[in-house]
Amino acid sequence: MTINLHRLRTAVLFIAGTVSAAAQSPSASFAALQQAPPSLPSVPVTSAVQPDTVTLAAAPAVQQLLDFRDSDVKFDLGRLMDTLRDRRHEGWVLAAYPDPKTSRALIGAGFSLDLPAREHPQRDRLNPHSFLEPSSAELWQAAGLDPDRLQRILARYDERMATWNKKKFRKEIKSLNPDISDDDATQLLRISAIQAIYNARAYCRNFDSLTASQQMAMSQLVYQMGVNLEEFSQFLGLINRDTDGPSVVNKTANDDAGYWKAVQLSLTQSQWARLYRGRATSVIAMLDPQYPDAPVTAEHRVGAILRPAVVHRRGGRHVASLRAASYTRHHSVRSRRAARARKQ
Image (cartoon, rainbow, N blue to C red; front, side, top):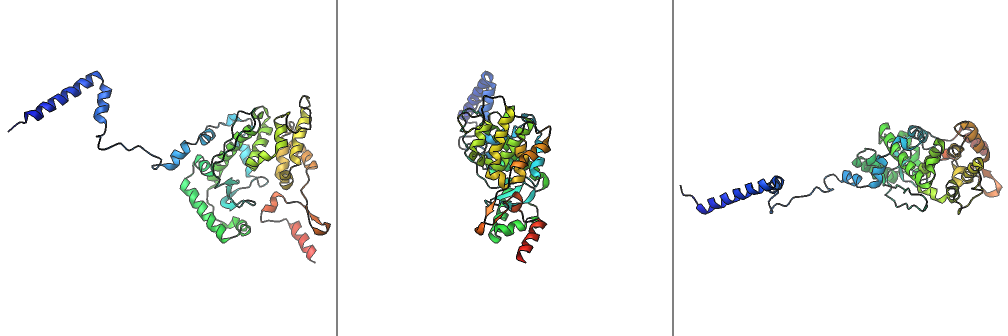
């Protein structure tokens, strides 16, 4: 057998060099032996492998929501969720249905299915808390739901909207098969309620010093109005005791009862309170510092000054205001009887 001395010498030198390097730096030697050949470059793991997981992990706003602890607020988060399930507030629908005003897809307790992530700047220089406005898809994933399922629900919703008008769609709500389970809707409600709490703190610089009921009221306002709460400048000026903003009370006085009455009054005069009188009455009443001692009395007090909006018609006639119930497909027996009487 012929031995190639040149190759043998090369092999011996290579082994000797490797052993020497290992003696000086074992970890470096191991890494050198493990690295891939130059002709086969390593392929990094990209978002194409699991795009939804990577996107979710990269969203700081979502991570803040996931880091929420029940002890971050004074009230019971479960109680807030139960309130929002109530028909007086958001209701509970397990199939995608159209928003009565915007026609955007909603589900559960009014969870928006197709909102993009939005910029919401903090305009209060004295408030260190920022707003969290992730997309519907990010909130959906934060609730632990499958993103592909969301796309299927939206596709089915678009098909129905193309076939039905909004009015017919809402009439068919109770006959639709559920798109999500009751547990799914609960998870969506929880993550949305947590977002409302974070944004309530961004709207109200004194949020942490509010009573449990007042914190809950602020969170409900944000859940129901979202970014539209920015338009309530008088209310926000009062809730933040803003001396530069509109005010009807003396901020240097120790009359907390008078102060909170002014805060409540700024909401009772809004169109939101008049259109959604039922939910507004309960939310506004919770801003009363004495609400925990006498909730019914507090609601009666607000209801006494809150009147429904009036829609005027030609000839001086008028009818009662639109309320939250007017957006459902059910009407009261009294209304139907009155309609028949007018026809006779």
